Amino acid sequence: MMWFKSRKKKKDITVDPALTVSDKLRYKVANLQGVGARQRQEDSFTLMNALDEAQYDEYGLMFAVCDGMGGMKDGKLASETAIASFRRFFSEMDRRGRIAEQLKQSVFTASEEVENLLEGEGGSTVVVGIIYHEQLYFASVGDSFFYLKRDGKLYRLNTEHNVCHERYLENIRDGVFDPLECRNDPEASALSQFLGMNGLTKVDCSVRPMQLRKGDVLLACSDGVGGVLSESEIFNALCYESGEQACRELEQRLIEHSKPNQDNYTALLVQCQ
Image 1 (cartoon, rainbow, N blue to C red):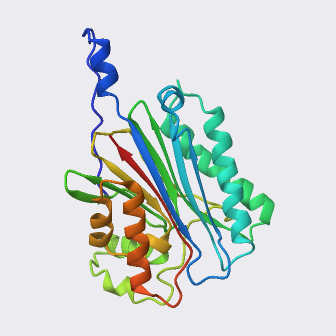
Image 2 (cartoon, rainbow, N blue to C red; image 1 turned 120 degrees about the vertical axis):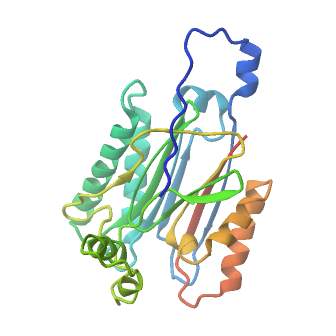
């Protein structure tokens, strides 16, 4: 994971209002969703204030992808419940307070709501991001993906919570640095953390906001996208000028892979202009 140092604002400098307006970032969003080879769609997503410049200038923009766990009770209900929780949080968020801390707490709140509703028998992953005053805050739980394309490179911003990753970290602490040992485990892909579990303890989140730049492209997606496509395929798709074209390219690549067990797939794309 790569971290970027936030840019400090200069004080006591008079700026031409016209330049301030023209230099503001503007955002274009696009989305992709499909059932894949599954019988029904259990992913859910949301975009808030994404189409209204006045709204995202004043209140910020939020996006979230939740992937309901099909092997548990009612994955669709779990993902929808989590999305509803994040929408309430964003509407009530204290924008003068510590947004990163509030966002992290909102993940635990959403997890509790899913757990209470499904009695610990249902679950969902999440990638949720907030853009406020051109700064990015994000949090994730599970095995969904969050990417940043910047300056001709693709960065994975979040960490997966699965058995493979947990055991790899344990092996590193024990002086074993071979990742193949973990990947060959038949339970490697099993989630170690997810919304709705009894005793969620780990949330991957930004401690400091990341200053966004013109030309940045953000991609939040379920593992039906990130777990199937290579990073080069994702990078090439994000190079398209249009977000809609990028999403069509992602879907075309998924179709070409023709996985017989293709999971539901969902992606949200935000272009900074």
